[in-house]
Length: 384
Ligand code: ADP
Ligand code: GN1
Ligand code: MG
Image 1 (cartoon, rainbow, N blue to C red):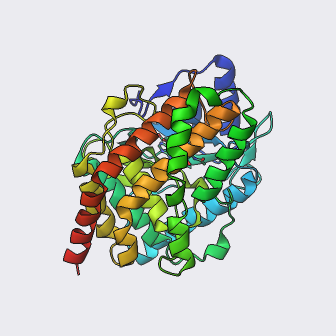
Image 2: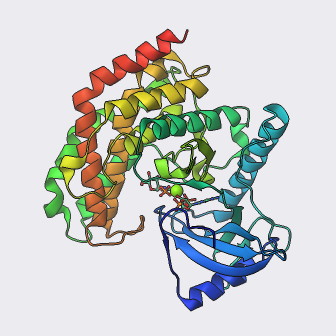
């Protein structure tokens, strides 16, 4: 048996039968042999399915159900993912002439579409399993950080000539931080679960920083930073890293590819790659902004995106980390106050724990922001 990759969970016989049924509706070869649930990722339901070919070799696939509570227009998500994967595959083969790497591919389902409907409804898709790789929730070394940032920068480069008009906004105002804050204030005012009193400190911390939430949008309105096609969910477990070499092989989780700001993508890398603590760590003393990781992110990102990123963007690389970390903190707190309706949770107060690590990381970034800005400027100016 091929060893399992990222943390997977055994599933019941009933679920196994359901996965096998779904898998058999896709144009994939072999006999269904095994299925596991992959637990990393807060949104979709993801299974690793193993098939046996006639010569006995095992072939693995990802079967994934789109979360329709989050993605209200799942077919629009599928159109976007099809468009982006087609564009990237074409670009890699024809333009970059890079035949070596693994890319993300959708398999056609019965009926010729790249999705099938599940027995209980729901939209399912099938991807090739990116072999030899692993995703990390916490970055282990600077090479992984450098590689992840380079991969997301390359991703932006690959989709830079994809007209934004080809893509639908699958979640409107996804990174509109002031609107995220507005929503938090609304939910707090209603306090549907009576939880506000227990999160006063977190709530006040966020409100004290209301003034920074609109800074990138303002720069964009003033024409100082451009809208591009961006990934929008560049957390570190959305890039497949080679287990042997720590090289980033392939960016995944393309559901939120939409017009956005490059800084949103860089910011989420800072949020997820600089701290040695898990996103839901309860010992907040473990939350740190590790400068060497930030430096590796800047180097990796500028190595692949440095030619198209402008000076105003470079000057805000550190700020973007603070902003996106605050934004996700706002979202976790909102979800906690609403009664955990958006992100998957596995324990009581899970979203609150996640919120707390985000806010602690915001603090840690603030303490080092000046040095972070200086470093990004130095590297960028040194490349010219
Ligand atoms: P979510 O939107 O829930 O985060 P993802 O698309 O990121 O869903 O998938 C969840 C996890 O499943 C990823 O973090 C990764 O570990 C694994 N995964 C997803 N797609 C693939 C793939 N094509 N090959 C290997 N692993 C994958
Ligand atoms: C979700 O899908 P996943 O786990 O990669 C979320 C991101 C958040 C992240 C927080 C569509 O990402 O926006 O930053 O959780 N994705 C969506 O960990 O909301
Ligand atoms: Mg994901």
